[in-house]
Image (cartoon, rainbow, N blue to C red; front, top):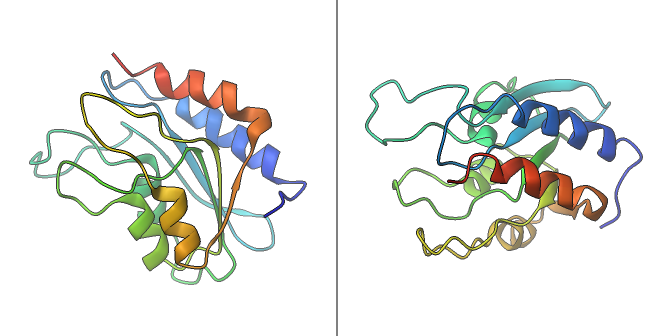
Length: 156
């Protein structure tokens, strides 16, 4: 899948959001969702919100927050995330790739694949799961190093 001219702009906006992340020991991720006309309809960053019951011991993922803020009609929407959407969560909560599929997102553009973390022992398959569901997926390799640096700010 090839990128669109506006993909770099929106992924850079997600990078700016990731800079707001102040929660230690997690990846600092930013996410923006854009409608098919190219207008932003939702955004979020990791650490922006906490779970109301505090039961998970962490905070919602950037994609999870952005998806929760989407309007009801999202046909043709593109989700931009600095990190490949997760395919598994040790907390038992629904993973971001499943959430993206259930929300009917048409395209996903991300900056860097999720690195293997020996503490978590998770091999992310988010990109594969999205493609298998028929979602167009694009990695913007020209922003890969910047996205990796941004997500690692919170990895202690």
